[in-house]
Each structure stands twice: as C-alpha cells, then as structure tokens.
Image (tube, rainbow, N blue to C red; front, side, top):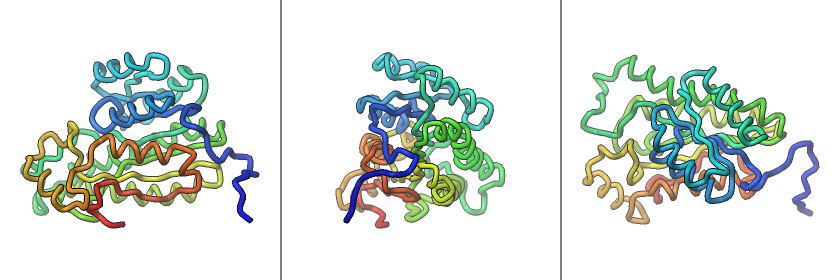
Length: 266
C-alpha cells in the first residue's frame, strides 16, 4: 500500500510560499522570467545581478515585500557566501532553492562563434568558470542553510545543444554538458539530506538578451522543426523551474527536463 507519509527527519517538500529562492543572473532575460514566476507564486526571491542594478531594482519595486536585489559576481566564492548570508538576513530564513541561471559574457551569435579550428583554451576556461565552477561554488554557499532547514532544491539551467547542436557553440555546450554530469552526481551526494538536484534545459529562447543576436531565420528554422511549431519562451521554461522547486517534484532528483517544444527527445 502506498502512502505519502514522510517519516525521515527531512521535510519532503515546502510550498513555494514558504520558500526562499536565490536566482543567479535573476534580473535580465531568462533569469528575470524565473524571478517573476517565483514572485508571482508567492515565494520570497533574492535576485542576483552583477551589473544590471536598475533591472534588478525594477523587479524589486514590483514585489517590495518579497524580493531583494543582491549584487555579486558568481565567479567569486566570497561574494556568493556573502549573498547567501544577505538573503537569510533579509528574509529571516536561509535559502531553500537555488537556481543556477547566470550566464557570464556569452551571446548566441552563430556568425561570431569560434569554430573548431579556432576555439581557444581561454574561451573554454572562461565558460568553465561561469557555467561549472560558479554553480558549484553557489551550491556550496547555500548548502549550510539548506542543511539548517533540512530541505533544499537546486535547479541548474542547461541546454539542449549537446543533444542537438543546431549551432555548435563549443565552449558553452561543453560546459553545460559538464554541469549536467554534476547535477547527477550532486543529486546522489545530497539526496540523503533532503536536497534534490535537477536541471532544466531549454533550446534557443525567444527572446532573451543572450539570444538577441540570433537572426530571425534561425528562430524560424528551429520553430519549424518542433512539434509545437514555435520557439520556447522564457516564461515557459520558468514554469518548469517552478515545478522542480515545488512539492509536485518531491520524488524527482538527478533529472534533466528538456523544455524546447519537443525538438529534442529525451
């Protein structure tokens, strides 16, 4: 006989209204869509930004009681720790859900990308710092608070490009593939502590700051190849992020959910 009764020391789930969310790169593009979705659902949200102070403050102005803007470069571990502490000070409880969304200095411009013969160690290292080392450091910054709460949700933002490299962005794609591997290994390591770790992977989104350089012809080509015949919006991907933070996903960890209108299967 099945039962939903939870008998361990860890709560199986927390309603979004009781959660403290930290969204890295949460002031612009996809990050802003994720921040807005959590705020609309009643969660308290720490909106991280590096240089987009005005955009972050504009979001906070819409939700002054439940949002706070916090400046930090996600590549700096000390700044990440300070940000986690600031979020706890602001809301009185530690961060319960971390969304690793920040994308450091990258533009989806296929014409300007480095090709196979030209991609450099410096480009790979720069993306590794922003898309692998930074998410790991962010997780480590919020872990003490999640352990204090006996509950945690970590949601990494990935990409469908390593399954379907419609445009071969070598540095971006390689680092997101590494982040998927870490999603699965961290899920195994942290699961016994009541911390679920998952990834949400979009395709090209219409439209974010990062995809603004993408020609309309590319958007149209991708749309034509999807069962839904359209390009996914930031809001649609944000909905999937909320699912992984909500009680509805309490039994799910180590997974990668692709949200791209059906372009990539599994």
